[in-house]
Image (cartoon, rainbow over all chains, first blue to last red; front, side, top):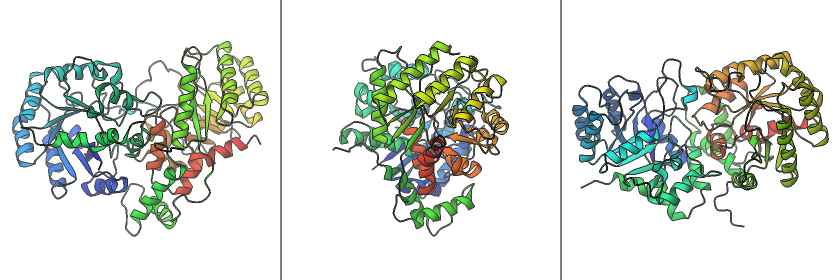
Length: 260
Length: 308
């Protein structure tokens, strides 16, 4: 069993994506042996009204809910986010959020953002934060969106100790408090592997060693990225099978379990 | 031998055959539908999985560690271990000076260390001679020494000069005489690359290739040089410029676009130290096993055989 915590449906404004329909993504998952995936709208990253993207995802996954787990993109700086959250959770059955503070032009420390995380956590939803969407070196001439600095993530996990965060598309955690064994941070965040190394510097292995195997989760970034590099990391990672199993699916499955 | 965690050469290639089999008999809609369908059908017809005799897998872009780092031996050993795990037979390596532009003493020292590593990891490490073309006489002497006396396989140029600047031409002319390729650092962004005012891009390399049609140039790291779609399109008509697939960026469709626009024969596999990214994107590409074999080693081997 493999659960991908980092997958998308829809269009991205700056590059053509393939395998970006529910059927296309499921075909790709079948080919790669990926059983389930947490999916959100790629289109919602640049839609002004992100809720339109959530509606598209809800419709797309409707007959595939056993495999595609919908996540909502909510912009807490935009009108009506509380209504959108309620609809995404109660009507669309979305299990978590994806936040894009730099693309949507708000700070993770803004009151509305903290309120959103508080409300989502109260609903038992997981909050994922993509540190970046694409490599910054290829960014369009139209937009210059920076990565989310990891020190802003440090402040966020401190500010919301009851929330559960999945950090996507990040790297360099071991150089911050997020990757320290005794960093003084709540154990309320999980780190996804798609940009981490499993050889040479081996940040995956380092994080397993420092934070524990319960805190690292599989993710590919498909269909933005080939899923194969992440799958290959699991193959070559120097770790016992039970550790790999936690990364592959067990940790993500636990995050998806209903919260009291 | 315990092979847990090791990737076999068959697994580089078998995935694409499996994809082909999975897709056989139905149309697959993609941006490059016609050609990919043909490639996938071909893969489907190859039930052997490995797609014929496999040659060596050659990483065209790797780096050994500068000896100013105390742990250089361990880091070099880890690189070889990573290559072992991933089924990479040979690594084409250079050492760059920590500070650039490199001095003549600086690049000569780097190349001496590469020569030592070629002996230490005999048959695994192949050497690129790194020079700063601004030191014309010293650079040309160093290239000749490294290729003719030490058995280096090519030249590595970085960003001291844009490759179309005349100061680079004597290096290219010597590469032609010695029949060795030049691996050239490159990138194209829509914002300036910090601290790299003279970085070359795919358009520059195509221009250099037109000026010197006998040269064999390799445009470095399509997955580490900014807008890769721009780079692929800029290289379209640069027939003697090869494209190195290395870099940490693993955007889906990158390798297929390069194969479609440039042709498989112009792609050479590399990692540039992003090991699973380098291997994973080739594994994930929807190309035939034969095409992957050419990218993984066949094309680079042809470049290495130029020298005889």
